[in-house]
Length: 169
Image (cartoon, rainbow, N blue to C red; front, side):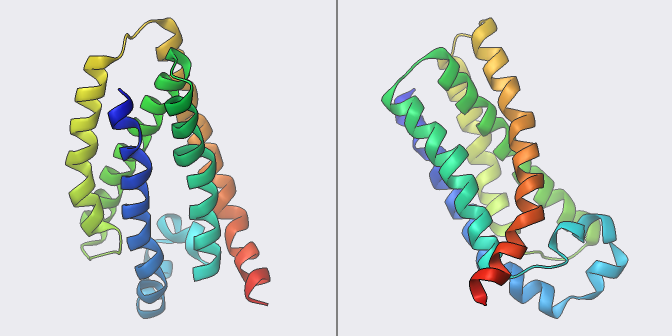
């Protein structure tokens, strides 16, 4: 199991770098998406590169790096289950990006790495799922991480662009 743990932060970084590099460019050149798809783009209305970097760092530090390193250093069912829940969430995130691009029928930065990482995440889910014992502890910890990740993402979107404006002065 340990050989798979460190892959999770790597695929997260790989994917989110495409977002950090491309979102500013995309949103500046495609302002129409905010009008045509207000619910999809609400979290990015005040987008700035510094804020995005702050949000990506926070999620990496707390979830993908922090929880992964805890599981790597202190292997146990709770941490492995939580890690598996993160893997489910991230793999689903890739599918959402692909779905958004299909829905608006346009390339959005994050598509390329989502297409690359979705099969990687799926294979990791199968291979690590075969290594885990899905007892009550593992299932509960995996299930508990998913709503925490979604809540954290929602909160991060609310404050990251304000933090970015402060950083940029």
